[in-house]
Length: 130
View 1 (cartoon, rainbow, N blue to C red):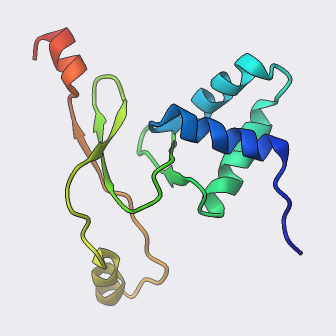
View 2 (view 1 turned 90 degrees about the horizontal axis):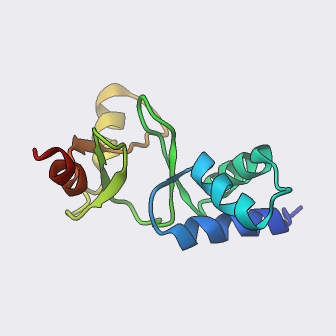
């Protein structure tokens, strides 16, 4: 049986794509609720999860922070500002088959990964004169 796409699911996907940055579930909810005040936070969270499971958006698990959702689906790396928490894309070649080394060496199956570099973004550096 095929899963139907609800209006709410389409709205969540449209919002992630419209914001064109790495957004948290709360940021997606706050954006949607401006025009659709009756939408529930749980509805947004469930649809983000569903969209990421289906591969329509990318979920980035952030250690010690809120997970982010990305509209760019091809594999790439990220850098997170340690001051403001904003996430940015890193412009560098993607290392193909890196997970194969982990799987072969340690015997894991279904290995996936997100590499998140840390640093201070230009805006925070300018604000704090770092």
